[in-house]
Image 1 (cartoon, one colour):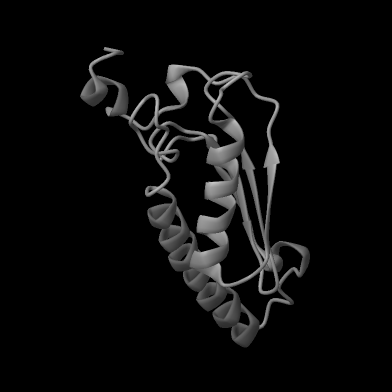
Image 2 (cartoon, helix red, strand yellow):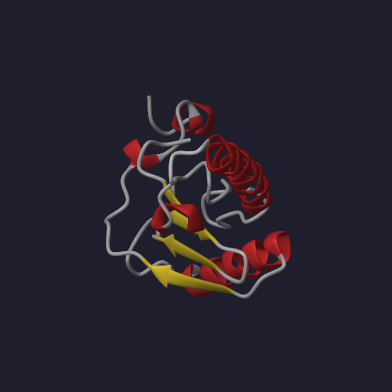
Amino acid sequence: MNDLLTTSTENESNPSTGNAQNGEQTATSEVAYASQEAHVLEALRQVVDPEIGMDVVALGLIRELELHADHAHVVMILTTPFCPYGPQLMEQSRRCVQDATGVPTTIELGLQMWDQSMMEDGAGEDWGLFY
């Protein structure tokens, strides 16, 4: 996945006290979070930009993903500011995350400008556009 995707966990606001039990709980929680994040990102691969024919993860449109026990939040950008499918892609992505996590999900339009360097490695070559 591209380097700019950032993630957040509930544990970031609760630093470990240093004892072994808390360390084990934190490690277990981080593994569970990584597993849930991978599940959500795999689910988001079903959301395809109809003009380009590639999914939002491969395009690098998912810029931030926050997963919590009671809610999720996604920051997403579009390939162009005036993308005619933008509202549809954002709502489809929001619903996809909500279905994958089972918690209410919000989505936010990020302000970054998209460029092909945000795509997953090799995705542009497979597409035949960027080499």
